[in-house]
Length: 219
Image (cartoon, rainbow, N blue to C red; front, side, top):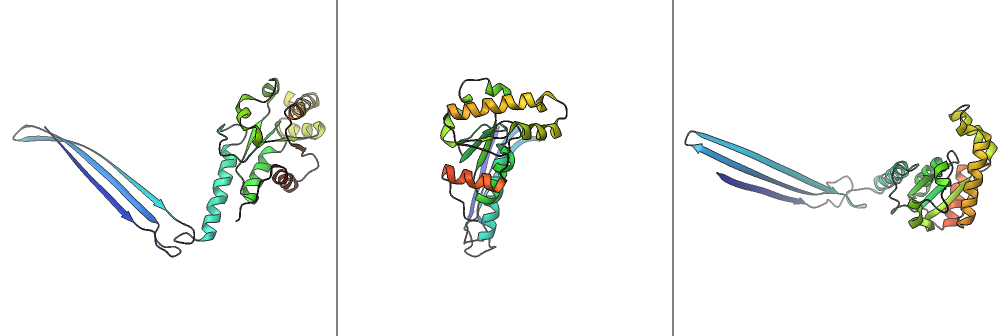
């Protein structure tokens, strides 16, 4: 019975010119357990693992345009993965939009990501969330990042009717109730808020940036 280990570590520095090789580090290891019951038979059990890390730096092997594209992708991916409560980890968020369903949260987050380079998340104020006194528990630790979006109930009813025709979700009574409770929450919690009813996405995003005090990332 025997046990043998083999390992290898390799490192290559990053080139100092655009489109050159990235910095690369490779690590691999192998373990072999051997069993020889007699002079004519031998059994080997082998396990191995390899890891490789690559890194590029702007102005070295990564050009500025490529870095900008990666930044846009990362911000956009953040908005999509933190949309409507898909991921509740808001530690890296720069702003969290809160509002009832179909109040304009998702398109505004994507615009903030694409045009301002902001990590924008959003949280849906569902009827259940609006029944709780104060902020939903998941938002309390991130109060300073919150920004409320509201909308005229009649306009909301029109949008919801297109999405779910003739449902309770789309009734004017439901829309009025949700909007009223959401706006009351914004007032009670002293949150910045604005109406998206007659406001373009560009204007909404611009007002959020100015109100929250965020700066546009250079692309």
